[in-house]
Length: 231
Ligand SMILES: C[S@@+](CC[C@H](N)C(=O)[O-])C[C@H]1O[C@@H](n2cnc3c(N)ncnc32)[C@H](O)[C@@H]1O
Image (cartoon, rainbow, N blue to C red; front, side, top):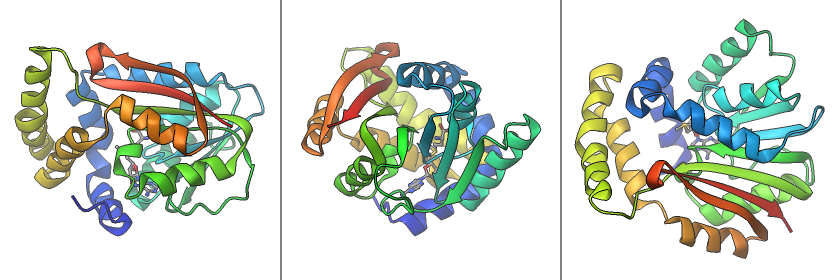
């Protein structure tokens, strides 16, 4: 599976116009509940500087601004960022949210810049997990917190089989019908199935200098929410 930033950026550019609609349909709107849980877990204080990695169309970032955070969102895809910026303007939140088109594997920020960082459904796309986590560690303040929301595959049967069938057959078809892009939604399914399990990811984060504060499965393990702290 090719996760080269240029390829990933182009793929998200192509699906940006229908990205929000498909999220709502494919997750039955549960994605919104999960993002709220991620924001709640971070405990953002008014005035905090928050990094939203892989900010996409900005839903997580905009929730963080409602808690008083000043958010910088970074993303590879210019089209996703254009949607994010126009949403921020519509909600009059554009003074608290700035976007930067950049690669999360090499961020244009100084060491120890952010009070906290977050990523929703973006860590799975990183070409090199160790480099990504080293970058997050570098730009976070000492003891800064990092919230990660990502899909996972449930362990329990028969839910696991049902979910795998949904991932493999239903998501790419609905994705194609609405966005016209089968490959992007096939990539979504494949990347979820190949992503490290929560236990493995926790081990990788610990090796990169993070302490695991909380790690919990959401909706039977379809998603997972991690909260870690820079050591
Ligand atoms: C599934 S979307 C998630 C968007 C948003 N966080 C959300 O909650 O809906 C993944 C986003 O990650 C971005 N992305 C993937 N790899 C990236 C990288 N190396 N650096 C920055 N952004 C990246 C993509 O362009 C895309 O907008």
